[in-house]
Image (cartoon, rainbow, N blue to C red; front, side, top):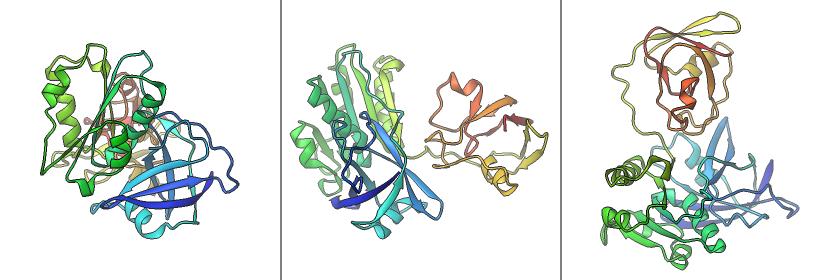
Length: 307
């Protein structure tokens, strides 16, 4: 769907907030806290951004975009090319990071730009009168987005030059039925999740959303083959190319978006072969018969894909 950029605001250093609305002011498809939309930025760029406004608002979608020095083009396009009054094509909201509804307390951790889905969660929980706490870490107050809203939600904020998050203390004080939600840089998320596991938190109560894939070394990658189940065609995948890149060049298009294994757009059924999963999207159960060919590879031999 095509939406109008009604407002843009610098929420923090290098973090731009956008408000998207229908041109006729009508209602937008509903969403729940934790949802994201795909934003089409031209020249084949599609990026996912979490919605950070209250899900009760039906007239607008609000997102926050960090200008990333290592950007593959998405954040640069938002910061440099988009302007108020322009139209952008977006998908309907999808939610892979939803709040649990079992009535337990929610413990929300955000690092940097990972605050966007956490903010929508906090707004939703506050409106519903449910118990929660927010812990937000950023390099500095200047780099921290939405501090005014977070302050109204009684969030605890931590900066590199000030108070640090006492993670073990915070986790140990929580009741057994608390659900933990975390979003932020890979290192921050690993710190929070590993801390919870060390204290015996059940995996079913740990929820996360990645904004970027964890670093993967390609030093030991080897060439392998992919066979197309429908036609029998066989393609060689070299160490420095992904399955989707090789197949795309051959005219076999698998839809892709993030190209890092975090969005689920390219999920493909595996008919035969052993997969080295490098995504951060599929569950252990889902990995038994599926893969993300944008980043995952074969463990030797040949993969037969249901294409």
